[in-house]
Image 1 (spheres, helix red, strand yellow):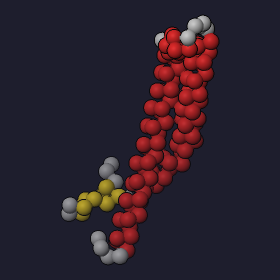
Image 2 (cartoon, rainbow, N blue to C red):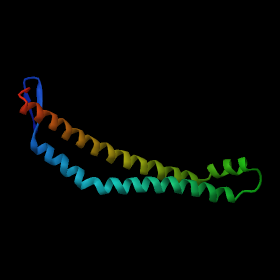
Image 3 (cartoon, one colour):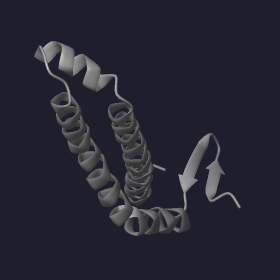
Image 4 (cartoon, one colour):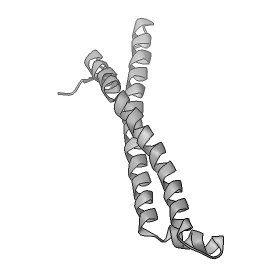
Length: 117
């Protein structure tokens, strides 16, 4: 079912669609916060893994840094950070889209009340 009602070349957002957008924001706020927490945790874990891996090598710091960054543990930490960032940005984008839909609806309703539409 399409909740957008065409008016000539105009499209209107229904109150049902706005209700769903509000519910989506409410229902996913905790998931967004958890995704942000996972992203921050993964960023810190990456630094920790680098430090632990560097401690395994003797010699110049630059060589220890290079060898640590070549380790599987470091690559796995990078993957965790990337996946956490993807999940966070996906949720943030969806919530932002829902918020924008609500803003468009508010403008639309204001214009209707003002007799512009």
